[in-house]
Image 1: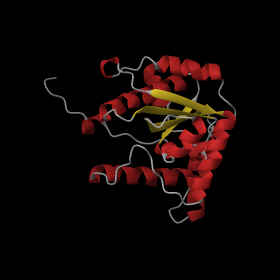
Image 2: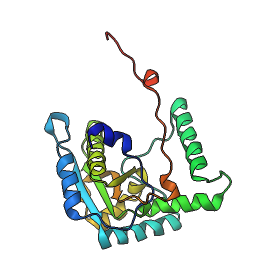
Image 3: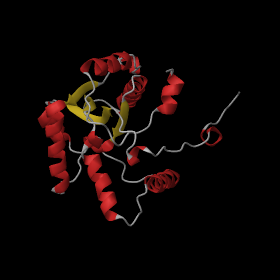
Image 4: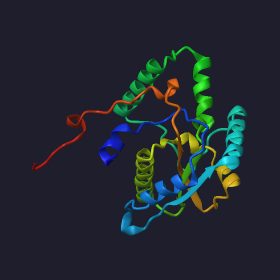
Length: 221
């Protein structure tokens, strides 16, 4: 599999098999991703990999917070609003996904099941947390974004599905308490890894992309 093939085949997996990913495979993925570039080779990422009984405990604590109505409080705050064009794309995405997976807007029970699946980390056997020192700026967040892409592409090459999700970091205090992440690190994003449950309806959707002539402006070419 080359890079273009990995980019084209990767998707956000929302249903994983319980089958564990061997530690050796995860190590291979991270070894490959460790070539990710960063500002002045600062390599600002601190990576925590969680699985097995530790992840099971975190998953149960996450679900309890959700059912208890604990409000999300991610270290990196989510946007409070979006530009109109972006909001429109997000709404179109949600509508298209709902149609493909067969969940009606008025089907509250089905929608609750989807949200709860998110709180279960999509059933993934592994979650990779990307963190950085709290003193760093948005430029280092950019570097962590590149690391996230590298991890997901390296995983795809090895037949390991992925889901990068804000929902995986909404309760950072639980992650710190369970995994032992130092307080001086911001927990920026989580990536669920595992083997895809390919027949699950939640994995039947593929999101659309804008055409290049809408997003690229050439100058001098």
